[in-house]
Image (cartoon, rainbow, N blue to C red; front, side, top):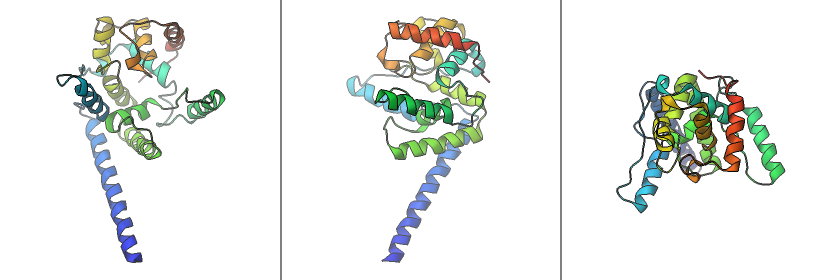
Length: 228
């Protein structure tokens, strides 16, 4: 009986390490190659095709240099001000988010870094569970160990969701403002960064009182944002 349990445990451990090895191999590949799609994009496309079988995603890959400096600064200012300083996890940010959620009595803030969000977008679903958070942490470590900060930000800006079926900086700029990602103004970039937590909630260029305050806050922080 005991030997059987050991066999099951050994089999599970082997399966775990094989999965982690496959994930790390993918990360190493994407350190020099652009992904055609991500787990999050595939999940969203499947949802869209439940309503419209002909649905397609809007996305076009851009080299890091072709993306407006305004958008890079806006996203870092809004999502991860210590992006260049941490190694994937902003423990101070996580603590602040926990305190804010505790004070409000509900989930109003997250502590995820850009690296953590990229890990989720590349490999995981929108499901919330401790197992998924653990896998997210492991993949975040892989990304930080295998890629430069510049590559992590380049990937994130190209796969982040910015609207219903809209992924990546170029599609977002075209969809919301009718310009290329290279031509985004500081305010347009700040608006795109402001909607990242809930991108499908807002219409093209919509400006609610909350968004206006958020955009102004991001604009004020952009000059201090450090990007690779």
